[in-house]
Image 1 (tube, rainbow, N blue to C red):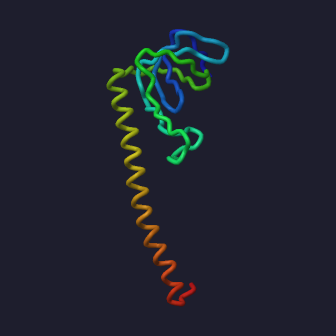
Image 2 (tube, rainbow, N blue to C red):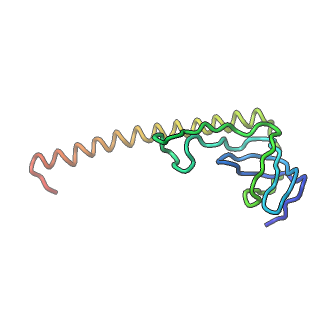
Image 3 (cartoon, helix red, strand yellow):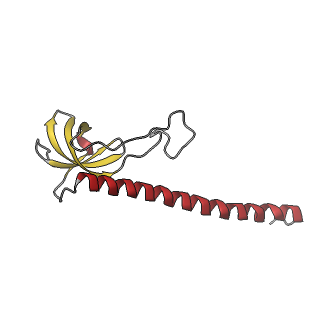
Length: 133
């Protein structure tokens, strides 16, 4: 694993979001990272119960702000050497991607439920007709 030093640009994971940032301080286990761009918007809801809406506290998670400094575990950091996108544009793209993925999940779930209801009718209408295959 490459050694990370103060001043390095990194790709960092933090509370289900991913960011590009600059390391501004290091400890033995963590790095203080100044956020420069958003790669993945944080997930909503309870991280301990993903994709569950029936939890006690459904968290709304904001992306870290431009130049916000967050302490991140060293194992979550990777050196970054690409172009740093504009923060606002990267935030917009990450948010739109997260919304699109959730819409796709809704579309899939709706279609899968429709097919399962048809199968349910097919499976159990045979019982009523005496066909036990």
